[in-house]
Every structure is written in structure tokens, then in C-alpha cells.
Length: 174
Image (cartoon, rainbow, N blue to C red; front, side, top):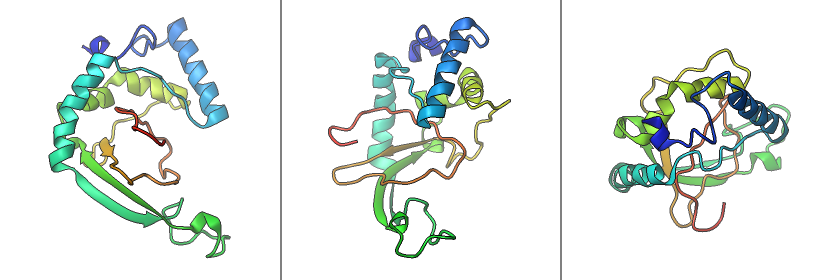
């Protein structure tokens, strides 16, 4: 049951249209407007987060794809109007280890991703009439990990929105 996974008392995602839900949507819209993001701190219950990590870590440790690439903040070779030596085009290195949705189909991560009330809530926070889960099993949800000396370097996401579920904080750094 989703109430065993998510803190639905603090975040009533399953009660659209209620005063508490509307207040949360308004708060998240305001944060999104002023900060470009909003957080739902401790959304996943600690016990569920532990179960989630227990599900995902063995897959990450044995089946993840290591992706290494050099890129600028735009992931593009050139940007019209920017000189080739513009600081925004400086290349940085990103290394991550990725598990795709098809490798964890019955996981808590996928259960959260596919949960309709969350999708309705996210649409409301962005002023959209609807959002839809991606059907591409390689891209719809990814679990990414970073090891010592690895990072997802400065970049702009190329999609209209991105949802990040932080499963584990780093030992140090950001």
C-alpha cells in the first residue's frame, strides 16, 4: 500500500482537491516559481526507503551500465550566439552507473513512478492538465549512482521537467 511507502499524512498526494492538497500544490508552485524546483523532504518513509535500497543496490552493483561522457552545460557542441571559448561551452566529465526501469520493474521506485496520484499532483504543480508516464523502459525511470571521484557535472536538463527521488545522500559533497 502506498501509505506504507509515502508519508501521505504530511503530503496528501492521494487526496486531490482537498484544502491540504491544494495548499501543498500552492506551496510547490511558489517554490517552483521562485527557485525553479520544490522539495518534498522525507516523502518516502524510512522503512520503505531501506526496502527500496535493498531492492536496487544488488542490481546497481551487478548490472548497472557505466556511462562516461564529456559535455558542456547544454550537452551541445555549439550554441548560436556563443563563441567557441565561452565558459558555458567548457567541457566537464560525468560518470555514473545507471540501472533502467526494465531492470527493476516490480520495485518501489517503479511503484512510486507509476502511482497515478503523484502524476496528478506533479501536473497540478506545473499547471498542466495532465502528465503521462514515459513508456520507454530504458528512459522512463533510472537509478543512477556515483562512486568516489564521479559526479553528474553542471548541466541543464533538456526536458520540460525532471523529478528526482533521492534514495541516499552522498557521504560528502553535493
